Image (cartoon, rainbow, N blue to C red; front, side, top):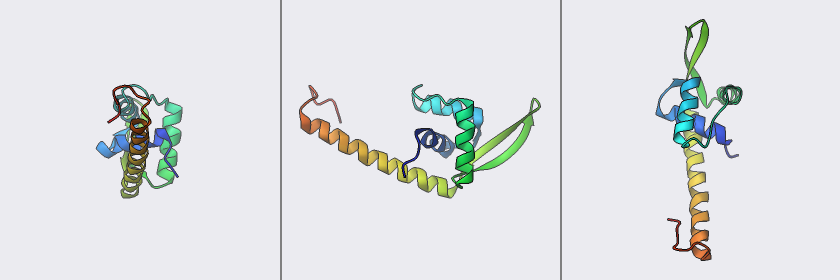
Length: 112
């Protein structure tokens, strides 16, 4: 089953390095050029699902300004799932690009 868009971006953010929720939100926004902005409610719901599924884990917990801050990291299972999703998306994008090139609908063949 394909990953939800939000889960894909969260796993991608955590593939770079372990980080906390706010860091994940900023990374997702940056990696998507602002196209994906996770709201806290969505972020923490997806984080809970990913922890439950064993794709990420809590690396550390600390209290910062009277609030609990959790740092999350990708697990080996999460890395494998992300790699599979990257390949699935790459294959789909290549197929769509090939079809567009062959369709003649794009002036100048604007798809690599």
